[in-house]
Amino acid sequence: MVNIELAIIGGGSAGLAAAISAYDNGVKDIVVFERADKLGGILNQCIHNGFGLHTFKEELTGPEYAQRFIDEFYKRGIVSKLNTLVLSLSKDKVLTYSNGEEGITQVKAKAVIFAAGCNERTRGQILIPGNRPKGVFTAGLAQKYLNIEGYLVGKNVYILGSGDIGLIMARRMTLEGCNVIGVSELMPYSNGLNRNIVQCLEDFNIPLRLHNTVTKIIGKEKLEAIEICDVDDNLKPIEGHEQTIKCDCLLLSVGLYPFNVLLNQAGAMANQRTKGAFVDQNLETTIPGVFSCGNVLHVHDLVDFVSEEGTIAGKNSAEYIKNPYVAVSRIIEVSALNNLGYVLPNCIKATDSLKSVTFSFRVRKPLKNVTIVIKDGDKVLKQMKKPNIIPSEMEKIVLKDVDFNSINAITVSVEEN
Amino acid sequence: MKEFTCIICPNGCKVTIADDGTISGNKCPRGLVYVKQESTNPIRTVTSTVKVIGCPSCRVVTVKTEQAIPKEKVFDVMKEINKASVSLPVKMHQIIISNVCGTGVNVIATKEIE
Image (tube, rainbow over all chains, first blue to last red; front, side, top):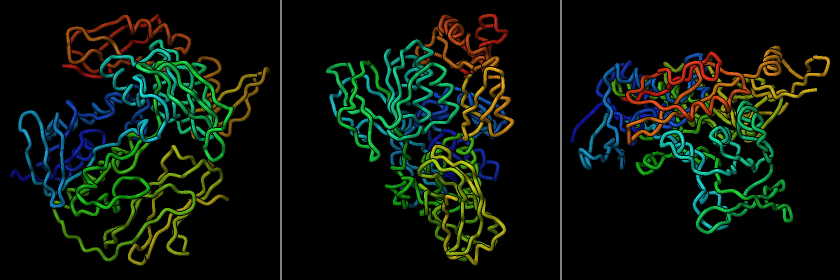
């Protein structure tokens, strides 16, 4: 079996940043495993602009943002295996992968960075009743067909879910001459950015129906119509509020979840809230030397933060390769309390050199005039006021200038003032 | 009276411009700048794809307008983009259509294809 220093699973925004960062921190023997025929991941199909405002201080399209990292990657001569699927990962960091040239092959790595991205929730996962005609797609799949393959998947389009991909596709298909009839959102608020509501829907007078969902799919061979219906406060359809809409295409933009299968199979502990891995502040999972970053860890809304996380995982994997055994004085549990959907990291390994920890979290519902509070028991370690906080924007808060050796357990919460 | 949703930050202020031109509802000066631009000359960057000739594995290449163009010209620009084609190789930021629809803005490739 071939031995390498660092294996990175996934060559998208997280994997590329991780590879560059590990290389710059002294690891030269890196292999990136990518299942597609090119690097860049999902950015290749996200052709709209608005990427990179944090990282490059300019607005780039997805492919341009990816290219900046791909150029840096190849400049360093880092090795990638394209068209290569990693089939399994074991606890002792043996990867089994397959591709057209090598067949099924194994490689053993000193450290592994898992950066496999996320999946879209499908019709089956939200249980829409009705027939199973063609014409029902996840928004991201329709985006791939249109922007990479050059095929338009419908003419009269309805969209379920007001996440950003759904909104972006509403605009994209309108520009290509489709009639986008409307967007339904189950929740009483949109999950998309204001910017996308304005520029993707309002610009084209596309109606957004809040507290509304698709209750039936109609059509034998091809999609002929859908039934939509208002929902009550418990998100249940209200009888008598059904409406039939003729369309030949239904796009689903109903959420993303980490594609964490390999790590689960390897036996890494999962975070029940994010469905990604349970990690410490170094993004190391419960398997020593295996790190997780990007959308496979938790779903991000900005690619800049995915790259940032990849950079952190890359640096820490390099540290691990140099010195796998670091003295940890205590393990501090981190929990999400009031109003929080989740918080990362899940635990903190206190060491003598640990100076600061950045927490990432999301709230469950939109809130106004709140205080973000970090506590150790009853003792407040840090608090920060915010006028507005919404589920579609991931928040970050840094805890520094504390003695981590004296902390028992950390809670993060958002309190309404 | 005209109403706008400010897109600068997550607050999403509802900003109104009264008939006499007074702007209200914005919580910060950035909203004022946005609404002034949006009410006098709204602009958008158009991103799309252009047909690639002679490459069976890549039918299209992604493109964008190099700068934002007037919003009312978006569909005219899309018509030109859908008429255009390009042959390989395509370089990053290669001009695909120059001065599209007389806007003074070029449509450029946002991807490289060898």
